[in-house]
Length: 401
Image (cartoon, rainbow, N blue to C red):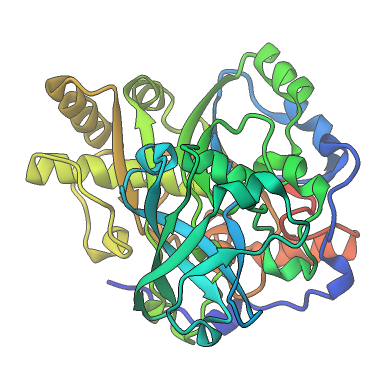
């Protein structure tokens, strides 16, 4: 049964001066709120390796933010911002990034009413000769609600990934209320980012430094990665009072068979870095269920965890998923998830979570509340009273179920 939850119950007062507009000079110098059965403890993020229990499995999301915001100009002079969300043709990220002449993406268009369907040229105020020679153009293909399909075309044989690096800017969150700056190129990216595809950073990972990662491994904690590409839906507020009416965006993810085997062994002792890792890991159970019942994994529906009671153990679901990959000769499972984690959700894999402090009335607050059995307000009140910095560039927390 879909839970009857009203988003107003997950509101709190967040003063503007508590939103971190810029990152701290050192990634691991941020505050760390540790919540566990014993209560709340204030730490520094560099303390994290000493807090984590040896023998755990720590899972990171190694997606990489792409400079997906492009600025074009009509012949009339009107500026049109195009924010690339996900590839359409080719639909695979790696194939789209490898395109050398044209590709199509689903996009959000700024000033969309001012775009009359004409072909746009890239805004090039400094007359950069490299950009000029590329001749990047944007053509509207179709529109569906708040998004449009746009075809990009260019000359010179560069891969689209390189085109974005040259012409695009990093899409920092809109609530920072500032333009992207040079420091964002480095700091709005985790140090272990590897696979291009996100339009928003998995921000819990922004605090980790090579030194912190080294100390975590020295403590006897196995560190592994999954990949979920973070979509722009992470910025979307819950607009309806009833959470049941909020549509979750699809996010593609992949998990290797080797990591599935490790999760199977360590189930109950898994630490997820970020809500994106939590959503990926908790989606695995439902992929396993689809293998048991339908013979193959399928995308995880938004309300699948609440539709009915499932008779399968976590071990049975993971075993089914691993067996399917072995039978098909696949080294990883690739799927999509729309899973929404709200109070009443049954966590099957993740025991601890590293995460930042999230926006009021957001799906991420709902996830945190589900994880800490409804005690999110106690945690957030403590953070506000203790001078913690909030949102993407803000401080961090380690939450334990």
